[in-house]
Amino acid sequence: MIEYIRGELTELTPALAVVEAAGVGYALNISLNTYSAIQGKKEVKLLVHEAIQAGGRDDSYTLYGFSSQQERQLYRLLITVSGVGANTARMILSSMTSAELCNVISTGNEKMLKTVKGIGLRTAQRIIVDLRDKIISSGIAQELPAGGSSVAAIVDNAVKDEAVGALTMLGFSPAPSAKAVDELLRSQPDMPVEQVVKLALKMIK
Image (cartoon, rainbow, N blue to C red; front, side, top):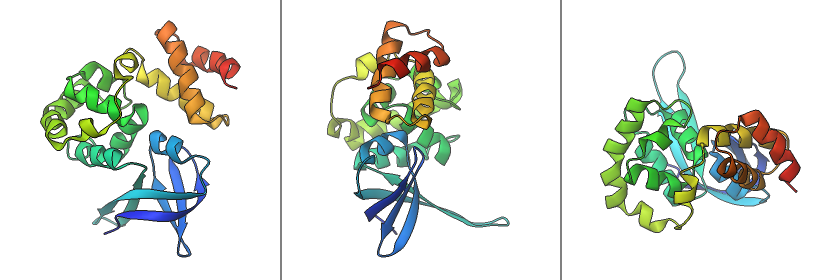
């Protein structure tokens, strides 16, 4: 079992990081939060979750990388919920920070979970019911930096995620992109994503 991979970051996209260690290049699926955390670094250490799927015509072996222990813990909790697969869990962790996700689940904020692409009402409710006590008892929330969650709760994460993704594809870094998008959506929560992107392009330095 691989616990973590430490080495040279040779390739990086918002969804994938390639880390070379001992002459081997490991491709790890990552969230936007991890992407933001390791962007610009030459040497990285990513905690690993291994997903092995056997059966059918082809077996698959996929690695998921995380910049923090808390994010990996949340990922592993999310994929235990019925209806939440690997990609959905990664989408959730790309749509909000670990601290925001802990706050959303512990307060039963199903409305915020529904803003994540692919999450319907039943799945949102199931995540809250299945994970609320586990998050509180595991102490993950206590280990996370406080602040910002109450403000973040008023931001439409579906629009935010799409806008930041578009800005990232245009070559802008995720952190300043997210900051600009957050500012715009706080002032005008109903702004369409294309307008958010257009205005954010003028704000990012």
